[in-house]
Length: 269
Ligand SMILES: [Zn+2]
Image (cartoon, protein in one colour):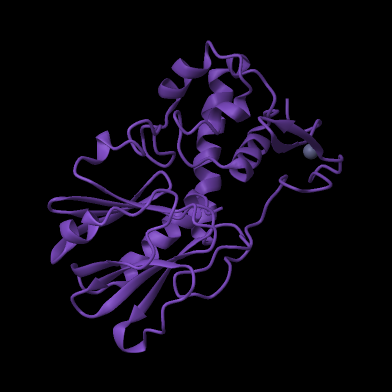
């Protein structure tokens, strides 16, 4: 499943690839995605200028003058970029395409169909966006924000930082890695984390995500780069799915919230 760093990478690639800032048309090829594609998307976006393309959580947002296009890649969504002259025939799992004024095309393909595309006049009120927590790389993720939340919670710190209503985009790998670097066991009660530890944890969440973005996201077998070439190169992981820690101890693997949680008994308190 594409994680925040992969989505950020896709957004950067789209921004780099598209030269025209005007949508000439949005064509629905197969409306069957997680939610059926609303045909009025084609109407609202016709001949509209793109003011900005950015990421909110794991959504790719196209900001137009009259509203927003929200794209989610689900489990296996891929956006391919074509020049119209080189467009190949429609593939089996193609769902929609956005054609720009200069004839270049962004086409969405999704084998497992868990992705989505929505139109939102008001993005903050949209049902996919309104309950999202703070962006981890923004200043909104800071000690005073998170301390207020953790001080009364008995849930494990790992599950808390992975809660999308609190912070968006801290996936399982990133949670394991940032807790390891911070020297905090994943199963610790949130309320037992000191402000000093929290400070470390927040800066390491940001560090781990930035590193992943710099390397184009971690390897994902179903995910392809915008140009259709498979995979992102693997990021260097310290604890996730490792047998041994850097200190030489065996890595422990427990289930928290149903997810594999790797940690070192020696390095993490
Ligand atoms: Zn260790």
